[in-house]
Length: 193
Length: 54
Image (tube, rainbow over all chains, first blue to last red; front, side, top):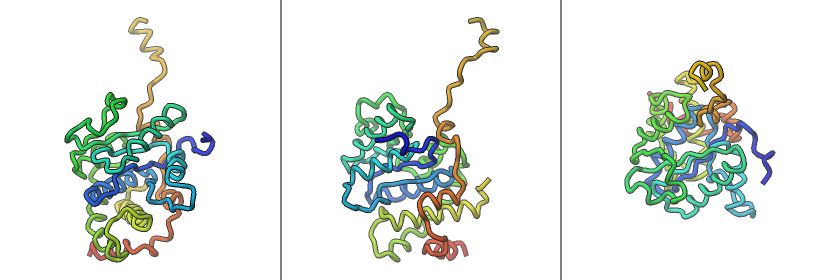
């Protein structure tokens, strides 16, 4: 793991989230918020398997990001707390930062006990709360602007899924569609300085 | 250290977490470039968004 591979001040933000249908709206909210804040959303769905293994691909992507966001509100994948552990390592050894999010319901049951002293962002499974509380941390945009992007994207998600003949949005093609759409909406709203 | 001395020399400021991350923000073209996104017209979502906006 070489520090030189991770650009200092990278604008890339790694999204460590559950890939399940119930999380789709919050995933769209995260993409909308990160783009509105003019940071680069990155996610494991971008990474095609080319024989190097899932862990190696995720670690490589995480290393490139100066910030990672870990939503432990419903960690269906055991990998999620593990990936948070990788982020903690990078924070301790390099200039990485991370944000932990939880729903607020059954709080603390999913967060590793070593990290319970941190103050997670509690979104209550609400996209609106996620947007406002995450932007409170990131800055760079008004919640109303990110909410507008979120509402536009959410409205077209069913059509996008139908176009690609897929049942979920946790795929590279859909991720790229959503980011491209979020950028266009942000540009149209005049959010570029 | 007295209050007056503290005012003169408050010590190193603690950089807020978000500020450290946001030393630089990306332009939207940089976000496209970082993700290797193609031209907007090649994505289906743009037609859908335009249709939804009508």
